[in-house]
Amino acid sequence: MDFKALQKKIKAKEFEPIYVLHGDESFYIDKLVDLFEDTALEPHERDFNQQVIYGKEADLLSLLGVLKQYPMMAERRLVILKEAQEFKQLLELESYLNEPVPSTVFVIAHKYKSVDSRTKFAKLAQQKGVVFKAEKIRDYQLPEWITSLLSSKGFTHTSKVPHILAESIGNDLSRISNEIDKLAIVLPEGQKIDEALVEKHIGISKEYNIFELNNAVGARDMVKALKIVKYFEANPKAGELVPVIGILFKFFSQLMRIHFIQDKSREGIAKAINVHAFVAGELMNSRNHYNPKKVAENIELLYQYDLKSKGVGSTSEVSDTLLRELVIQLIA
Image (tube, rainbow, N blue to C red; front, side, top):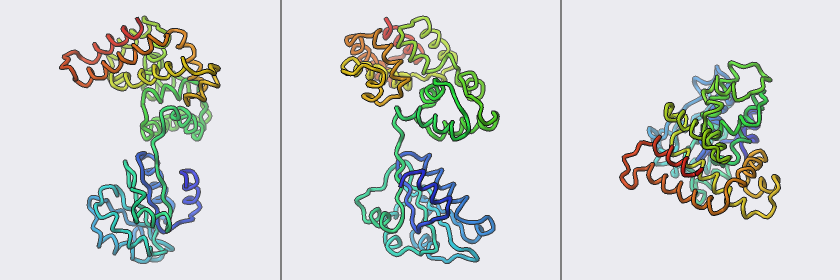
């Protein structure tokens, strides 16, 4: 069952006795746990019928005792095992999963990694209840995810906004969601979000951010690129070296692929490398500035500076000096 379908079922109070929420992306697991807490019981029922247990503190016998209790003046009980990845006896719950108490909704929140699907525990959970796997969104999917989130909050936006947020914040869905929630508090519904509003309310400069540095390098615009580097030198958190290298590496890797794609239309490139059509257009422009030989040299250069940024080679140079050197060599 996917996230939206599971949300719909919970909101409709169509509950199963077992839920295993697991996977690398904690954002979805946290959202679902919050929804269970808000929806499964009425406020006056929670004192006696809702219990949250943490994996590190859990004891199997005590947990089983809680699960087998019956509701008091309510239709059901809600038991949530948070941080279940810390519960060393998790797989021993298979005896309960085999015969769950129908009036108990048992939610297992197993974050940051997946439950082994080959275990009897996982197979029983699938048979007796619902298993939801929360997987990380791929980088190329992030702008579309941000667009959907902005739309759900009643906002429209300029084409650059999702890409600025994606490149500047990275694949941290919780932080992105929190930043957009801030916008929802201070801006009226229906407001069009542009780069100026992002800078004002989120603190990501519309001119000096990782996204714009990537564009400047793509256009081989040395003056603009070095202005952005200078801004990063004064504001280190705006453009840390390791994330910048990662983004530029992805950019040049995409350029290399584009050089050898037969269908060089914007739509063909977007489909071939799994990017938004807007990004495909930017990449097409950059292809004209970098031939395959220069792209290969830059990929090797980024690899070398990635090692330097991590202290390999005993370099004593500070990261902003490394970034300045790197950008000059990439564009030159």
